[in-house]
Length: 406
Image 1 (cartoon, one colour):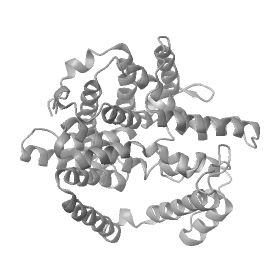
Image 2 (tube, helix red, strand yellow; image 1 turned 60 degrees about the horizontal axis):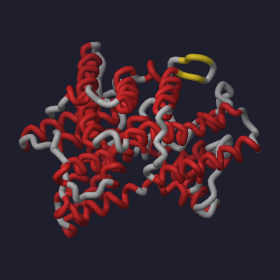
Image 3 (cartoon, rainbow, N blue to C red; image 1 turned 120 degrees about the vertical axis):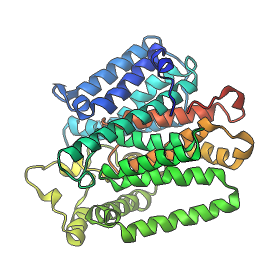
């Protein structure tokens, strides 16, 4: 991939604030996010707050992406209510609220860039981070191998954000103007490096990149075949690969089923649980113990584990907090994605292809892990998300304004 790194460096100040935060997440990893400054305040959070304050010095009154503002306002209402009736420490309440806090703080910075920055700048930067992540993970895999360890055994990733970057790199390769052979080698490298992370869901994220790309290339009749093939592929993964049918996978399936039942049936798909309540009640804890022998919630050393461990699905965590139907607002960009896919023959745009595929691939990763709840890579995902929202918000008929920067 040929990336114009010079143009990335010569960005406006609000871009630089955002880009430096993302680069620090990728390059410095948990050293950046877990370095304590004072009390519950960590280095990443301090830098994020400073960047938000700087962006608000020249406040932009227009609020883009109304669905995000609605989600935040709903979550804010639940936060205030949770603080008024709190039964646990405020620190626990705010830790649970972090999934919405990170979303809105990164939104504030991105919202300030709209109107002052061409969306192409963000696209260039995202492709650059994909290339950077691929390089870092490749070097780390070599390092692990030199140390005499099996790089495919256990978790081996340079930083949590790099996993997202590998998925983005795959999207950049499939939508690039490189030759078929070059793209094939690039995507193969992404698949292999995704496997080295130790997360089956990272591998699945890259697979979804490929399936989404094929889905975009074909007509509606062929898309049904691809959807069916994708379903069969998932079933075969579950039956053949131990990573998709081991205790961790079983734990996730039981937990997701429980959380969704509570959100949709018990809470009528409208009511959320707010913050400061245990994610895992006695019912699911007992079921996990009986069916899987899981004893993690019985440890005396971690009495608040039920309040801190989530469903390992960031979107289900959102549903749990503010309600299923209100939480579905997060998926509003899929409306634009479907519109684009149905009309792609007339409005084909390689940049929109890249962003849509990146959005789908990285969302799969978020749907199987604790991502948006933690600072390690939440900002990276929201940059992808907001850039895609901005792209579809600009309309699909502006092909002349777009360039293939792969």
